[in-house]
Length: 145
Image 1 (cartoon, rainbow, N blue to C red):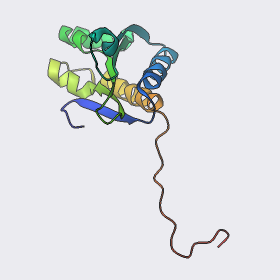
Image 2 (image 1 turned 90 degrees about the vertical axis):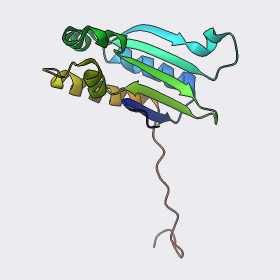
Image 3 (image 1 turned 30 degrees about the vertical axis):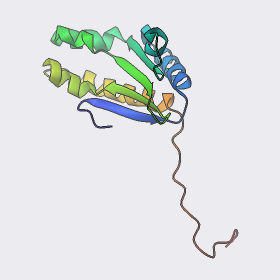
Image 4 (image 1 turned 60 degrees about the horizontal axis):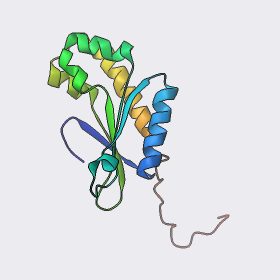
């Protein structure tokens, strides 16, 4: 996925489990869950799983909104969705990109860096263990050799 400012991580889990794990991790990190919106359930027609989590920590978000009130429309939220092939994804906005978008780059470096680290950790936990690349055995390989 390459949409400017959007970080998208493949999940090894189903959409509901991915969102449940994300919600649990957000709470475990002491952040408030403000809303969990299930677009697929509310659509009234067939829509692949698409769910948004709005969450935050006032100590991080408030200084950014003091720098630019419009940051409030983007802080923070994550989307768990399923593509047409049945693959689950977790997407969220890159905090550095948000700061540039809203003109909140002065004096916010420390908060933005910490926010980026937390979001990456939450995404990593929510998407489950990453599949390890398996290398084929070399010809003639024997156990104990």
